[in-house]
Structures are given as structure tokens and as C-alpha cells.
Amino acid sequence: MEAFNPMQYNITSVVSETMPIATVPVLLLIGFLFLMWTCEEATTIPGPGYCMGIGPLISHWRFLWMGIGSACNYYNKMYGEFMRVWINGEETLIISKSSGMFHVMKYGHYTSRFGSKLGLKCVGMHENGIIFNNNPELWKEIRPFFTKALSGPGLVRMLSICVDSTAEHLNQLTESAPKPEYFNSLNLMRRIMLDTSNRLFLGIPLDENKVVLKIQNYFDAWQALLLKPDIYFKISWLYKKYEKSAKDLKEVIEILIEKKRQELFKLEKLEDHMDFASQLIFAQSRGDLTGEMVNQCVLEMLIAAPDTLSVTLFFMLVLIAEHPQVEKEMMKEIEAVMGDRDIQSEDIPKLKVVENFILESMRYQPVVDLVMRKALQDDVIDGYPVKKGTNIILNIGRIHKLEFFPKPNEFSLDNFEKNVPHRYFQPFGFGPRGCVGKFIAMVMMKAILVTFLRRCSIRTLKDQGLNHIPKNNDLSMHPDESQPLLQMLFVPRNNVSNNHHGE
Ligand code: HEM
Image (cartoon, rainbow, N blue to C red; front, side, top):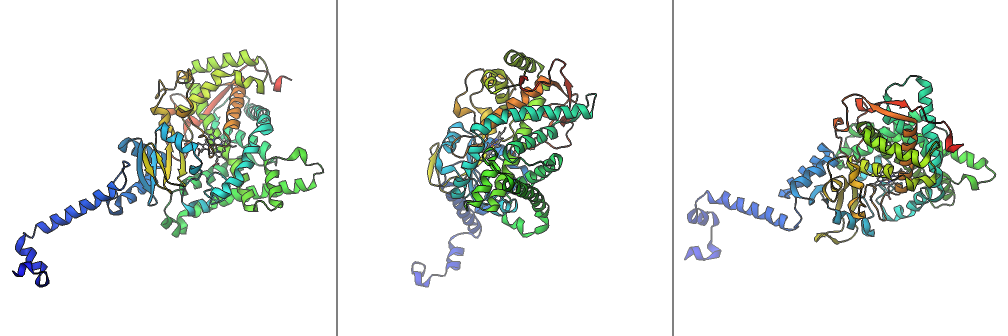
């Protein structure tokens, strides 16, 4: 009777009497497994288990250890093309399905990105500039300045700026080395990108080599700090080097902007000088923007092309050297369309082979593999519930190799032979937060590539190929500067006139 009276109940004595000691750990284990199961049940999206917080720790650590791109590919291979991990304890979806990508890019409630607040602060991007400005209100105010500068008359002017700058840089090369010799082609591309961006957006003379180096260091810092946990920023010597890289570039840009201010002050007629930097400076004097915002926007406009286009064009030069048949086809088209003169605006739509080559290069060897966004409201993507605040990584590099294309793992112009539906190929993203420079980027790539090809043929060091570049698959793919593949030989084509714009 005692055993049935709860008030008299002595638990230890009852347990030891009614079941053997060994069942206690078994019960505990069952309870633990039940806990794990209920945590996993909370979301139906595939992914590693929560496992009392160990899952989030491991997945964040994997991102830090492998780099964002490689970690995304690892998880997609392991759990499928729509899966969930944690970064900094926050639920993060990795999507490599065109349907999910299309949804996220299209809708206005995914117009924010994510990243470590302290890391972004360190490089000056936290609620500042455009690229990783995660304050939707501030971002909305700043984006029109970029849209305006990168379209309309600016876009038209960029074509001749690119032709002139490429020709000048190639001339400098031949002057400094009368006999063709191998040199760092990526560095050359970076200098051309910085020069063209500066001519259109700022217009203040600068030391190309010095600034290119500072841009590279800034990019490394941004990439290194983007996902670091807050605890990392408690130890100053760990991030000091990156902080310095960011500060170095910021200082150079501040000096250039100050020079620009003084020039604008001296001008009598402003109409012809209303470039991107001037628009921002005037917005600051009207009280619409802070000085910090102006500096960061100019900095981001000057790093955008050297960080993306230069690497993309470098990959294209390697692909040309590896595929002489494709080079021949492009040369045939260039000669048919332009004859003996440089490229002009009306030639652009006629250069179909060149365009397909550019698109296929970006598909096969992309510089930007990933797009990072945040859900600003609850939603459903591909049938899965997505909570407000969820981080989203669109693994676009993977999508471009999984769906639609007839030869997904080969470099082949056949992949663009037929019209590619919009939803299967988005190297620049699209929609309200898509790449604001996508149209100008296409014009720049065509102008620079055609100018290059008309003047010289390209040789890489023997036995080297794109597959030999270690895939530093991160925020964007920047090859190691010591790679022998960077060294290229530009052999002048004899029949090229030095006539700019057919003069
Ligand atoms: C091959 C060249 C380029 C590639 C592959 C590329 C790719 C991208 C991608 C994938 C994004 C993120 C889009 C998204 O979230 O949906 C982006 C954003 C951006 N790109 Fe590009 N880009 C290139 C060149 C350029 C150039 C030349 C500029 C300007 C001169 C530029 C300016 C920007 C800016 C400012 C953003 C941030 C836009 C925002 O957050 O509102 N890009 N780019």
C-alpha cells in the first residue's frame, strides 16, 4: 500500500526496487535522443541536427575553416540543394535550386544581406556604402546614386574609356619590354579596371600600383572578417592586420575625395563635371549624406571592378589560351563586324560569339559564386517555411552547373547556343538587390576583351590551365598572386592599327 501512496513515496528506493540500475542511463539516453528529435522536427528543412548547440558550432566552424563557397558546396552535396545550417547561431539556408534563387532575387523582402556586424564595422561597411549595407532604409537612399552613375550617359562613355585605357596599358607594356615577355596579367587587369573606374567615377590622378595593392588587401580583410564570431574581435592582435588594411585604403580614398572637393570648388561650370563622386559630394553639402557615407561609396565604386571584372577577364584570357578554336571564331567575328577599327557602341549587339564566350566563361569559371541575403519577413520558399531573420546563401555557381546546360561541366560555347531562360543563369543576380553594375560590366568586358584580342594573342606558361589554380572558393575567387598561371605572354598581332575609334 505504501508504494501506492505518493506522499510516502521514496523515489530512489522505488526505482532501485522496480528496475535495474542500468535502465537509468538508458532512460537518459532516450530522453536525450527525444530532445534531439524534437529539435530537428521543429524545421522540416534538411540539415545537420541541433544537438544541444553542437550542430551550430560545427557548421559555423566549417564555414570559417573551408571558406564560404567550399562549405556551401559541401553542405549542398551532403543534404541536398535546399538545406539549413547555422552561421553565428543564426539559421542559414543554402539554396542551389533555380526556383528558390529566382524567388529570393525577385522579391523586395530579401533586400538585406548578413554578416558579422563587428567585421563589417572594421572594414567600414556596417550600415555604410552599398555592397554590405544591411540597413534597408539607408541602402534604399544610396542605391540610386549607383544606378544613375552606372547607366545612361556613363555607360556609353565607359566604352571608349575602356578602349583607350586598355590600348594605353598595352602600349606601356610594349614600350617597357620591346620583346614580348611574361608578366602578371591579373595585375594588368586590375590596373585597367581601377583606371577606367577612376576616369568615369572620380577623375583624380592616382598611383595605380599602390592603390591596386591596397584594394587587394582591403578585399582580403573583408573576406576574412565577414563571418567571424564576436569573440574573435575581443582579441585585437587577431584582427589588427585587417583593420590596418581597411584603414590604409580608406585614407587614400579620403585624400582623393578631398582633392576632388577642391577641384569642384574651383570650377566655374559644374555641368560637365557631374560624375559619381561630385553627385555624392553635393548630396553631402545639401545634408542628404554623411561624409563617411560619401567616402565609403566612392571606395566601393572604385573596388567593384578591380575585385570582380579583373579576375573574370583574367579567367577569360586563360580560357582563350586553352581554346584556340574559340579564339579563332571570335577573331573572325571581330574582323567581320569592325574591320580595321576599334569597337563602338553599335558593334556591341552584333558580337554574338564574343557575348557567348563571356557568358560561358562566367558560368564555367565564375568570380562570384554566392549571393548572401536575409529574409526581412516570414515567407515560404519552394514549399519550405522561412522565418523572418533567416540568412540565405544562394549558391549560384552550383546552380549554373546543375540545371539546364547541355554540357554543364565542360567549357563549351554550345551551352549558350540556344537561348538560356532567365531563371537558369544569373551571374550578376537580378531584382532590387541585384548587381547594380551588371550592364556596365558587360560593356566593359566586351570593350576590353575585343581591344585585347585585336592587339595581341595570349600564351600562358606551358602545362598550366584553369584546373591548376587552387580553388580558393570563397566570397569571390581571387587566385593567389604567386600562381605561375598569372604570368602571360602577349604576342602583338601585326595587322592591328593603333587607330583609336577608327580615326
Ligand atoms: C564580372 C563582373 C561582376 C560580377 C560577376 C558581379 C556580380 C555581382 C553579384 C552576384 C552581386 C550580388 C547580387 C545580388 O545580391 O543579387 C553584385 C552586387 C554588386 N555589384 Fe556587381 N558584379 C560585377 C561587376 C560589377 C561592377 C563593374 C560594378 C560597379 C562598377 C559592380 C557593382 C556592384 C554593387 C555596387 C553591388 C551591390 C549592390 C547592392 O547591394 O545593392 N559590380 N555583383
